[in-house]
Length: 75
Length: 383
Image 1: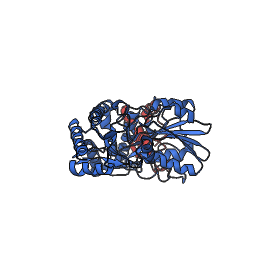
Image 2: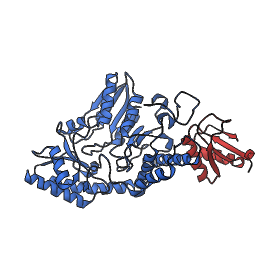
Image 3: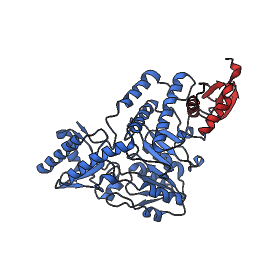
Image 4: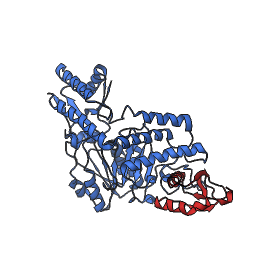
């Protein structure tokens, strides 16, 4: 799995990132919490990494759970 | 040993509470939500778990609306000091604990208008008295959901409907009720709910928080403190979203590990089952105590309209003396005096001496109630 196929979801707070992880896992998606990449944000928090093919599924899982997120970006 | 001080702090705790805290200290220990490493993530999951369990218990859809702090006192201070400003009017009741009364009296000196609605001498509120106290500048109604002295339960929903009809924010102090009385923030029209972890939620001391309802504009709720949140670190201004706005500084994660397990225990047992057991204990005590001459019971003396907290006095023996004899001669732990609620004692007519308070808990037994009643009979006789 090359890095190019990966995306990250960025959040306003780590509380949201951790909730996002749970929501994604409950939806059966493969995700991992990672330190927020410096080139995407200077935030000291955590981001959720996932495979590009799951982008739509991730977004709809977040929306179903009413989870606020900052943005989704290629890694 | 018989422990009847559950209205102050419940004890013992479910073993799962202690093991969750030990496991955190031994195996995780890291800072929640500050770093991306796996221990930090595990710590963060524990905090989320605590948030979700509280949200489930109170019927709150978004767990991010649960903001953690030290205890109910801190949460009440956040609501009161965060919302009210000079020229605003706030309504409270005469059965309040000092956790509400003192912050209100302080902001009163800063120009906030305070109305204290009288409760009956049994500790109950007639909701229409709230209606009558409402003015044009009323911003908040803040009330204790059950008395910490006589256990009398507030008509929570009736007051909530009055607050909602008048578009006034409604804050509840659930210190005596969360975990032992069924509650629903949405149906009860509660906008701000202060809770503490160390009573009927079975968590450790030093845990609690505020649940912030959707009708509260957080732009108008000032935090008590500001500082590091692990988010928006590039800015020197406090973030303006939940829960970070109100959670500066490293939190009591070990405490929240215990709280999450405590609330899980309540959810598994069910509040209804806990309530039923506590009502049985209370009924047994009230029945027995009402037959003891020279013993005065306070409050409504009906387990259906109160929590498992009861107050009484024995004629010609001061509450402090009764407490000492119970502790030294009968090994019964209780709390005597004013219970941080002078206004409530004035309302029930026991100021300034106070009362002897028994706070029964889920782990007490009917046999323990029998022992205590026997001790009281002997004390009355030896008087």
